[in-house]
Length: 83
Image (tube, rainbow, N blue to C red; front, side):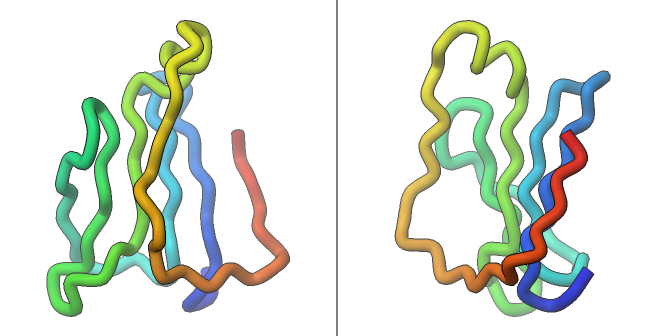
């Protein structure tokens, strides 16, 4: 993955949607809404992604998924999804 790409990953068994920004680095998660987490780089404290637990269940129930903006993200056009 390139530095400023957005990688979208869905774990069907765990029903987890992850949005990853840039290269994987040591990070931690902070809950920003029930079941929605920011992935934060331990060193720079920059937001490096998001995780949504019970993603499919939320969609089926018509629950909104809200991520606060602005988030300083630059996305390269060649985004690949594995959902």
